Image (cartoon, rainbow, N blue to C red; front, side, top):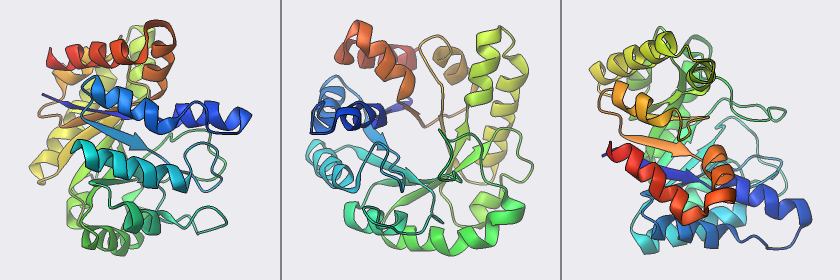
Length: 249
């Protein structure tokens, strides 16, 4: 079965909009795990707009207690600043099972593109080695159709995460075939190079089943925005269970 890692960033957005500690990110993550989620994902940003460094520490303890994976996402090139020690330092403190590297800038509302290996490869190599020395599995965020996806393996990465935003947009228009084929082709190329395949971004209950069925040997999806939004109507536990049913096929 494809693993479901629930991204709880949006819980932190709501908390931060008023200050204080409510809603509680750890309590929400615990509810997801109690409902059967296989892991928790967070993407702390340098401006601490949602998940903060102290959240990462608390979620690391929670996932260890449950015996599940913490997937920590971030830009490995973003410099440390007040309240943000840098991505590698966060990983050194939290020791997540998986570190997913994403090339997002400070001004981006959300991640919207994968790495350009022609530009970023040699900068990524020592960052990947540093994270693997900490015991982290390393995944690189990539666009479907990227020509040199096998380069991720040569750099030392263990997996890729397919950026599924374009697929989700195409699915919403009723024209997903080409986008889905591009995702599947990139997955096969990555697997041929020895890489595992994850996926995430804008996956929801309408488009997930078709995606998971089309991607060979898909290992994990990380879903946050849609899942948390849907949970406002159906409840968090029931929404997590609905996603798990979809992934079971």
